[in-house]
Length: 125
Image 1 (tube, rainbow, N blue to C red):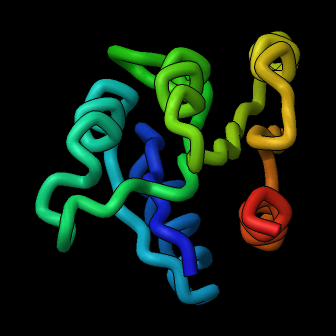
Image 2: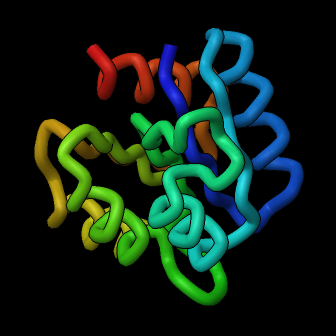
């Protein structure tokens, strides 16, 4: 299964999304903002065995310090990386879709956990 980096400033959303993705067998590293997630991207996950790179970034768009779109731009420089962006703001989703490609998917809030799981499966498929 995939190694996923999850970035969201809302603790309850982070916990729900993490549990849903782990239930699908993925390994999930949780971060609470874009800056912390960028540090993990750049280090390959810090304490991970062998420094294995992430396969997927799942990120909220609206976060302090570094927003999800800027984070996605950094992540997409890695050839293996796929990105799932989540937002409740339509103008932010339009901005996110400008990055569009086969390596990026966008879901609107409110979303179901199945929406997140399906989005990740699509990106990995």
